[in-house]
Image 1 (cartoon, rainbow, N blue to C red):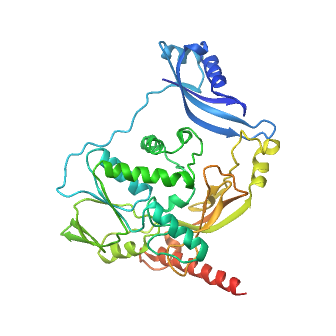
Image 2: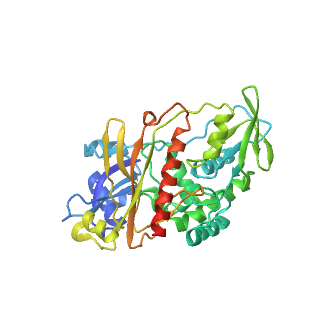
Image 3: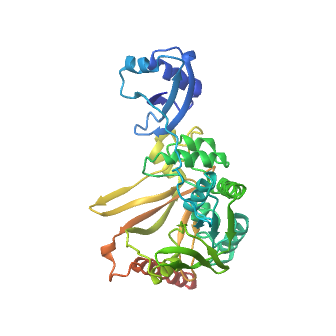
Amino acid sequence: MIRIQNIPLPLDGDLEQLRKKAARILGVRPGALEELTLVRQSIDARKKQDVHYVYTVDVSLRTGEEQAVERTGKKNVSLVLPKPYLFPEVKRRSPSMPVVVGMGPAGLFAALFLARNGLPCVVLERGQDVDCRTAQVERFWDSGLLDPSSNVQFGEGGAGTFSDGKLTTGTHDPRISAVIDALVESGAPEDVKWSHKPHIGTDLLKGVVTSIRQRIEQLGGQVEFHCTVTGFRREGDRLKAIVTDKGEIPCEVAVLAVGHSARPLFRTLADEGFALTRKAFSVGVRAEHLQETIDRGRYGAYAGKTELPPAEYNLSWRQGERACYSFCMCPGGQVVAAASEQGGVVTNGMSYHARDGRNANAALAVSVLPEDLPGSDPLEGVRFQRQLEQKAFQIAGNNFAA
């Protein structure tokens, strides 16, 4: 397989033009290309008078691929050998099923890949399934009535279900393609495989999440909704059971994929003697803008062309370990209330697959370092977050009262 990078294409270009350009770079006829696979699509908007797409493709020739690469002598042309992700060999099995705690992205994919490889799990989620959860979230948005166990943070799919469905990472791990393939198999749009900033959308993600859960169940997994972990039973340094509000579940291997907002479980872990370590985290605000303003700033005279998606932006500043940056930018989206505890204000951003809303929004966050916090309690950061959320709630309440 030959990989060709940085192929420019006009906004109205198509796959046939891309094929012809790839063939021209290799010095062969377009018909000599047996297969062409999109690897990456991005937008070059550095010159506002020439906004265009840039592609990376993999192509195959019937014979002579190595010679074709050598003949071009170009840095953007190379031989590649696809390396599919291989699940580690299972060398030891427990008499009890593994338990995965949490049904956000980490928990869902841990359970899916374990089940695919002959290790079906018990999956525990304190919130509800997508359908019940959607009704609870919409009630919260309409009336302010919060269910602390099932909300924008807790429930099937985790916080991501109501947070846009962006698929971004700064790593180049080979497992990423396996995760993307699983999402597409479960109903995500095909373009998440090659888009520079892949995006599913909250409206489509609900069905994708449900499909993954159903596949876990088809492979022998068990899913328990509205089930909260309250403790762990151990013998010496060995786990023997997960304790829940519905009783004990025998377990020797557990994956805690509980997410950022599982504060009661963090306290349980600390109280039961598990080793916890402070880590840096971020806090901030969410800013909203007119989408057409962002489009003009990024695309210039090309703003509004149907061939271009709503524009995004990224801001970043760093000094030593301290950073201030934009995060979770949602083109054509909306700001949503996302509290998981009574008496606190938390906001998030989301957009549907079409991203056709009037506004854009993004978080502007700053890092909080372990040394910023007093004392030695590993949960000091949780207390700090709560204080900010409660203060925001008081400010919002006073403004409404005024």
